[in-house]
Image (cartoon, rainbow, N blue to C red; front, top):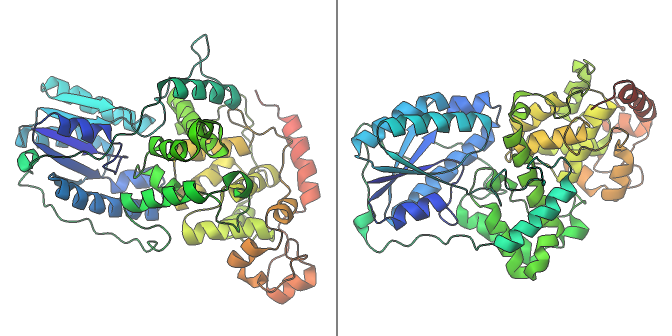
Length: 463
């Protein structure tokens, strides 16, 4: 009897663990373990947890049609997993357990404990690479060290991918019901209770995710439209990638089908490689998961300004593009990538507030919250990370607004007080306009804040 333990891989297609478990010819049961307390410890958004549970329910239905029974267990913490997994294996006479690898610090600790207890009890554990384009550690310099600059990393990455690319695995096909597994009598196989109200924007299921990806690939003009938040120019599949409803390899496959080998050099595939890069960094440097900066001598005495941080969190800074982004985050659990950079630069480089506070706030609200990408993005924005934006690159929120939301369409959608303000004024409303609309004055003076930031960073060199 086989057991496939689903984790951050909630899909049937391009799922090596599922594919090989069924290909073995042995009866197979699927296991889902849901960790409410662990999600809280990791600071993840409640909406993301509900989104994940909804996809577990969806996948159980699809597995049932495939002829695979499922077991769902709610355990508070990762630490509870090894003993429970052994209990299930003994109850069902499991000989082999199949998983797709996790690469982050806590997950690796959990999996090592699982491996140890299974080895002691002579149960085989089969693990596969699944959720990234390449396994971390694949792309290294000639001296076998990690690249600290993205461009050479990407160039070598593309070379390796082009030389070794394989199509994603198809959905497994089961010839008969002989695959049907069992379940422990002690566990109730009931759908998880789900409280997710964002299905209009984020429909549930692997089929929905694939449809969104296909539509984007076939119709996108990503290079020209990706920086304009009022335009639906991005793929919007990051929440599905974050919990493995779709794989990065599937994303690349769709692009290659549409564009041929030129897709390897496309801007969107470059974003997928950034995702691998940040995961590779977290794998190579576990300290990044422990609130430490990549740069060893990064400045670490940020300003303590709870009132200003609260204004930023609530979208009440008086800078319309910043406030629009922060309100989009609170309303939708998502934010346009260009605006993410603007609001992160505003907090860390203009307000000089600890980037970790911003990182945690994002993680607490993002439906696509991803430890590696979120940490990497915030360290990039604050000039503390690997291949980060230089300290003197400070986004002017008003200039960014005028350039990328010229008519104020994005601002009007989320900062409703300004809905009727003229397009020329909406990026930095006059004082009388602000009073009439009950919109706050700027929380900082941009020119003074920028000058202070440049001086502050110069006085605190980073290495």
